[in-house]
Length: 367
Image 1: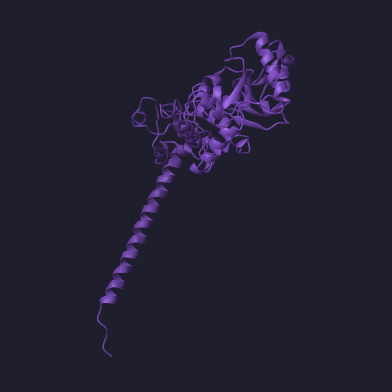
Image 2: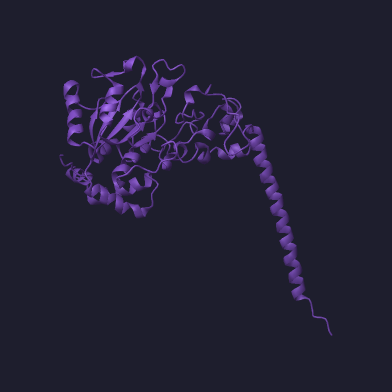
């Protein structure tokens, strides 16, 4: 097996200073949600561990995951592709084509057997023996199984690879099937979204390289650091939801004031993703901030759950049939009751303190 250069060696060859390298490690730790104490560990890994060979496969998909990844800002896509990892095969952005591309794939599989990562964008159709998706004369289903056989781990990019997405929408004529139902003997990291956030994609790869293990996953196989909370939990419009202030029409006063979009179909209360914290376009915005409700594109089955503009009737951690009006007014009622209780307790404490002070200052009775 050939020896890959480390990330640090490649960066130094490109004229990157030690100070800039440590700054990169610091930004990487921040993007992963790690404390500053982990920066030396990240630096050590990037200095000493060889770059990880990555094979990026494309099945039934629209290439939005690749389009998202190449717009990553932390780290930059060029740093991730050319320095952090060794992206040896990706038929969308690689220079080689035809036989040269397939030979590059074969070389990586042979030279780094058991040590490469397979990144999958899209899913495989099972109907007609997989003939609905052909790559280099081979059904994608067969190629996926063949390449994954000696992989170290598999990353399922986007909702297509993670859940099936619109290709699997009822009645699913091609029988499009997500990766985890086809490959069952390898560690699989699901990074759903249509597409996923670019910094989330690059951070997952960075974590795997720095710590030589897959990131902590939830019960659905998603990285907890990015899919551990609902968009609703950190949404800047959450205060309006709690106050029962909602947009009722796209051009009403509530829309102009930035009220909650729940009644307009926003799926933020039921969607687990990092959109409201990491945001898009280098942290500029995300759909809700731009005035449109969340579509729930990182959730399994979102494509078959009805209109994107019909609101859900229940929200987790509340009465399952509660409406937005009841929830908002209920929260407001609780807040009001809490304020009254606080005022009452404060008045009692004040009265007690006053009585104690009076007792202390009163002259003692003569015996």
